[in-house]
Amino acid sequence: MKKTAPIAKNDYIDVMFEDLTHDGAGVAKIDGYPVFVPNALPGEKGQVKITKVNKGYGFGRLMELYEKSDYRIDVPTEEAHKFGGCQLQHISYEGQLAYKEKQVREVLARIGKLEDVKVHPILGMDNPWKYRNKAQVPVGEKDGKLIAGFFKPRSHEIVDTNESVIQLPEVNEAIQTVKEICTELEIPAYHEESHKGVLRHIMARYGQQTGELMVVLVTRTADLPQKHQLVEEITVRLPKVKSIIHNINSKRTNVIMGEKTKVLWGSEVIYDYIGDVKFAISALSFYQVNPVQTKVLYDKALEYAGLTGEESVIDAYCGIGTISLFLAQKAKKVFGVEIVPEAIEDAKRNAELNDIRNAEFAAGAAETVIPEWYKAGNNADVLVVDPPRKGCDEALLNTIIEMKPKKVVYVSCNPATLARDLRILEDGGYRTIEVQPVDMFPMTTHVEVVTVLELKKSN
Image (cartoon, rainbow, N blue to C red; front, side, top):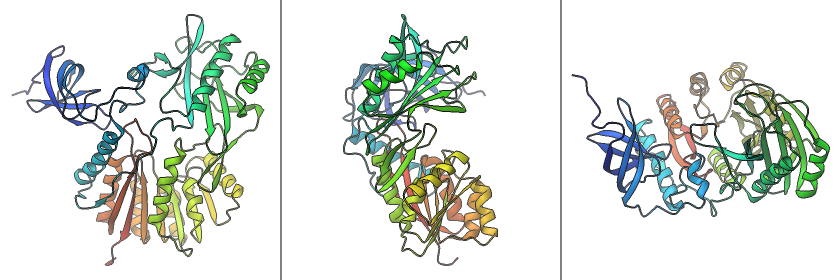
């Protein structure tokens, strides 16, 4: 007999919320059937309008709250609910940290079968607001003026936003100022539907430790109208600016940056520090958006590596060398690998910038390069991985198990794939010693985790 959902679209139902999903929606169950509702918290009771019904789950909209959670707070800005970037703004910071720590513990137990592993209390920020050092916002037009901000969830409608509660003030100011200047100079916005117009995105990057600002203008056309006046106005109104970049993206695509980049004014890069390590940041560089918490994360990774100065270390997914250069301060030798060739060039430049000579970098897929190194006799005492959200490639995990480094330090941006990979490493002869969640992205559902594994003695 075919099972049907106990609810229908447009039903109004009173529910109690039991949990949060990984993207911050409240979970209510109606006769065992889960319904996901944004802006609802565990322990709350309210009325929900059912908006969509699938075979195994449904979606709803919160219409009225009867009982509120102790963790619920007023949303700081009116725009907050209009776009999807800050899913947890309505939860107190204490509540956010509790939710993220619980998420890590639960996925480790459920997916990794690691019920007894030591999970430390999450490391949060003293001030969880205005921390992001980079913004890249789409540009459109409304009533003859340029608008720039964020897309509404599941749409390409731009919400004009004057300030984001998670961007540094210097980044907010730069975006607003450039938008105003481009409006005054009548530089036309790009129109996605017709693939006409000029200005697609405005990007700002800020070096928190150096006070250096970069502005990037992404256009459909190779020609940037009024560029001399534009540069003059930006440099006058934004005195911290050190770099003005023009990026050309002529394709019909959702990808923000195009392949051609040129310097309009100033330097090709700005600089910033994480701890004592200096980084050159170009328009295309991957650089952590929250350097304050990045240092917390990397300090913990360095502590877990337990380096004495005699170890050979491999850093898989090394990016522009951020973790590698931290490790190189304590290791005998560090080998970094990254699939993006431009990132490897940045890593080499950053090593030179810091006069670090015991770090080498290679471009290629970690799952290809590291097995080649192993076959060539390049073994590692400690192996560090910081993979993308999909986790480590199976070939890399197999090589780690075969290579048998004494320690594996796993930095993860996705607790679910971390738990999956830890299970594989545990079954391959490793023991998960301890786990440290770090809140890198307050007001969002994302959580970073650093974990240390040791080779079991019998191996």
